[in-house]
Length: 233
Image 1: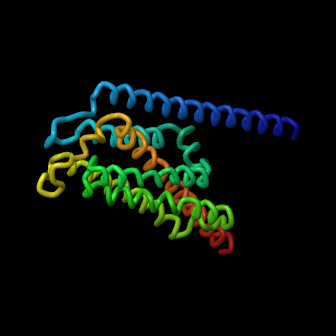
Image 2: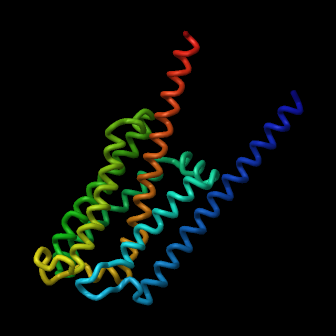
Image 3: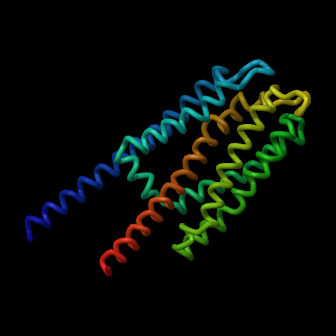
């Protein structure tokens, strides 16, 4: 019994050490990623001539998501970190998206086109405004995490970001008949470029991490129910 307790304690310490390393590495990657975007933004690497596909920004959105999926699939420690992250914290970070009001302010001052600013701004404001309510629901009702309302909120948050990227790309000058003379060219410059190249993929990752947790939790519940029926049989 004593040997078993010692072994269990060693395993527990090893898991804690692995968890700390995963958190440290993840934090380091986030910092390096931010520094890289700042460096590229300062060098004008995201800027493209009007009417051309904003490929650097598109890569800036998609590449981090590919790394996220790969790490989640291939790294056991990162996989565990994602599935144990606090959903209340992840929902709370989404509250920052109320800053989407800035898109409407920039539109009002003729900096950004309404075709992009209105859907992106209003969508972000909705997610940011409802985030505190979502946090309270998660605190007061543990089962809210698996509710269709919470899942729908996360899916809506992802959809809003996809729409923002899509309308932003079209508003870069690819569809002049739709957006007019004003384009999303300012989004390729600092500090605005931090939004599509850093914050957008980060917010998508937080939504995905939450949905992964919900999916895993649901699968476990189904397995438990199946096992109970098997035992009864």
